[in-house]
Image 1 (spheres, rainbow, N blue to C red):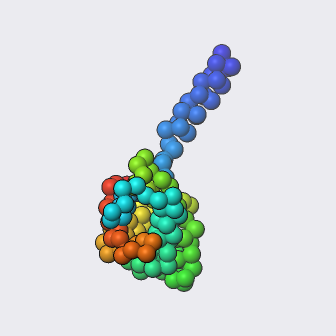
Image 2: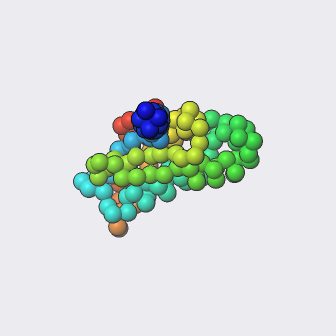
Image 3: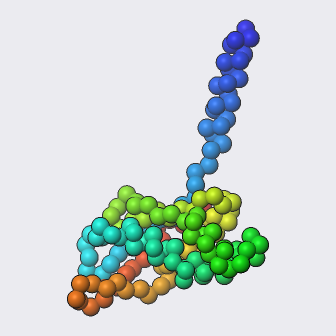
Amino acid sequence: MRRAFAYLSVVLMLAMLACSHEETPNAVIRVQVEGQSTPDKYMLTTEQETLTSSTFLRHVNSELGLGNSWGLSDDAATQKLREAISVKQGSGNDLFIVEAHGLDRKITVQILNSLCGFYAAQKLSMGSDGGSPKEVHVEVIQQAR
């Protein structure tokens, strides 16, 4: 009887742990370059560099007042964001999943939505080999929740 109770206790504890696991908040963006039907092989690196650029991260820091909330200088808050943000390839060639790790869930959602919204609002262009720059269109497909 004790063995059955111990076994049942372990099973219930594992079930509770599995149910309590929250996924990392993420946002999904679509990035399309004018006249380019498929992204080039460097697109993931380009998106990671863009989303973790000082311009983008300073905007998020300023908009959300993260430096003050975290008791950090603006440069330190920007660096903390840079270390937290990651970009992965989504299910489509032009889809990218943006995540932030190691931060409170509520602030992570705000950071991701601010970052991706700022990106979508930009009028950006990408240089091409000897030709005229191509417009980059960014759309937020899924906001962080």
